[in-house]
Length: 411
Image 1 (cartoon, rainbow, N blue to C red):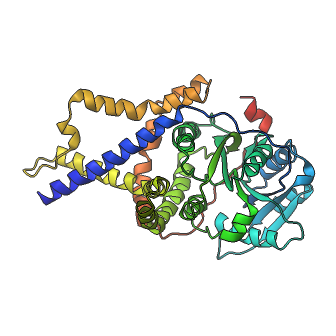
Image 2 (image 1 turned 135 degrees about the vertical axis):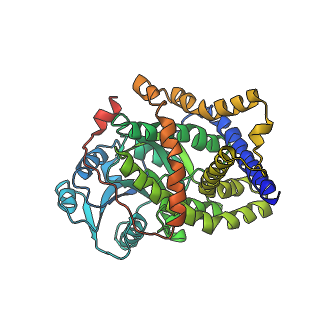
Image 3 (image 1 turned 90 degrees about the vertical axis):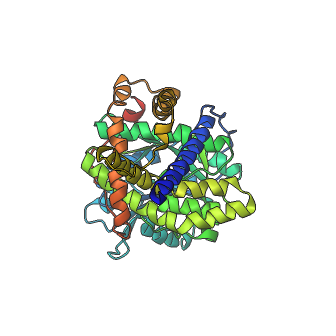
């Protein structure tokens, strides 16, 4: 009886969170107008995190140098972090700063950024803002122009629109692309419309320099973007999304590489949840601040996935193996039509987001058939991440396919 009640309470809590997230997503259907344009006035230090990226870093540098923003107002710094290939040489050949770092103990993007910021603050020239990209990225030519607009509007932390540059390479990259479109529209934009905090996505990020100097980076976990997001919300600094500032990220083609990348994300997510859930929840309740409560709920989404997986396994075992003490499922008490509505509500947002994002490729819509396999794979990955969350070793994703911005925008 105790176990049955416990499982019932867990199911109800998960259902409440699911209803909350679904309700939140409904506010993403309306897209706000673009923010007012300002004349170029903010200066930028553009940081590119790179570890053995000789194949792709040149295409990004060419892309960045061609942005429609005054060249005298931005400089490009490539963090050549523990590189053993020709990344630094290629960076210098392209006429931008190659900042070489060697530290085999403190490995990973978070440590590299923290080191680079200290180097940057010591330089004679100081910048109004810092923008961060990954070496495999590409960006639209108006990215800095749009960041300038937001900085002039007194926003301090800005996230660009994350997209994929290789969505049609495999069913795995297609799944990433569909997930990105869904998250941009129904997770990020909905929070923008509700004037709640957005969450950083690891690349395409812009930070006010004075804020960075005041806060310090301090985000050295495996998910430095989520960690810094939580630190911002805790300090009442709410990152905003610029929906027009597009960044294209290269995604792993194989399922194995994808699983390795997502395992790292989930390992880091568990650590962030452990450090920020209760402080943000208590602060949100005390201050009656829904944004902080929302951030707290977002921080434990990794536990929602884990508990949902364990609960599903237990319910299936209970269903297959006859026993007197049957574990009660809330879905068994619902009429079939209501369960059908719940299933439809969980499925339709993905094609809906694709249509709102004006995806024209029928191949991408066809990949909605394989998307469930990708989504279900999060369950065992998260389960394994829970038991390996103390692993702080950075897992590098190798990038070898050169794509240029003209190819991406031409699709």
